Image (tube, rainbow, N blue to C red):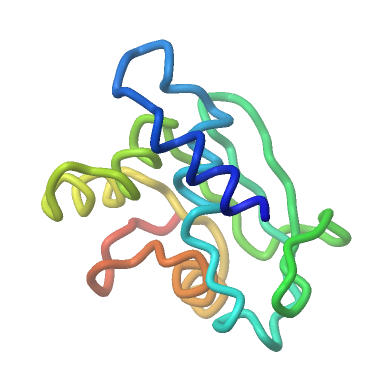
Length: 129
């Protein structure tokens, strides 16, 4: 249901400066990409730092929930890049936006996060901390 609401709201999103908010970055960059089938056995917490605003949450199996432990991965990115990564006009624009995002965590945890939230168009796109 959250994904449907995010999709509806972001369909109305125009690429104006006032629409580039940390919340829209979270909705577009993370929630829209969540694939519960890839998260079936996952139990991990994550932190996002988007334009100075912190979002913490967890994946418990196929569900998103409140963070319960230290984050396995911290993703730091501008809202504009997260929005462009998901909704970019071209594949090249999306890949370039993802390259500017910074993932901090163990390689295996970063790979799982990128797979579950569909944040990897090509291997090695996003730099690690």
